[in-house]
Image (tube, each protein chain N blue to C red):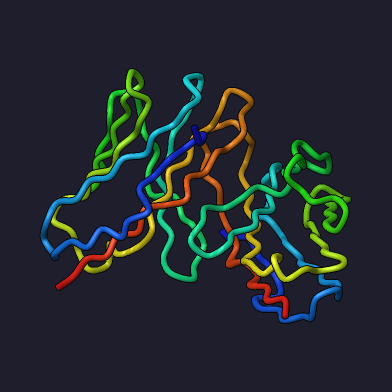
Length: 115
Length: 109
């Protein structure tokens, strides 16, 4: 089974620039998550999709972050404009169905550095 | 009180020793509990689910104490490869996953 694919692995940008991350979940996984993980902290949920609908985006800084999953498969997360505090690892995860005991499968993450 | 709390560590443990750490949660309606393992600069991976009756997987034992609202992870005969950060996660009554910040474990030869 192919895992969750994310790209790019690393990205360095200057503050106020924009950046986009891409995620392709495991085939058949209806639920997709984007997490932000700052060094030394647990993952922080940014947005959760069920198919192509948003389930939870309460912690997404909507003035600068946006995400979409138009066809219910792959997803993109965008930051515009970036701030220094956005430096973190952005993890995409998927699962068969939210609320079940099926585990989350994470991608390798995108390590973003904002200078 | 935070929704979930873990001792950040690090726990420095000699190889072969037994180590245990807990994770407390504040939402008594929490439904499911998990331990994830995260290696340095890697993504989290499911270690084990935590069942009400407690469960064991090789050298790892997970337990749930609903009365005191915590889960625990015990590692016996620790190996160097067990060095990682252990994240507790629970599913709340809204079916949302709540993550702890993790406990860092370092196994020393």
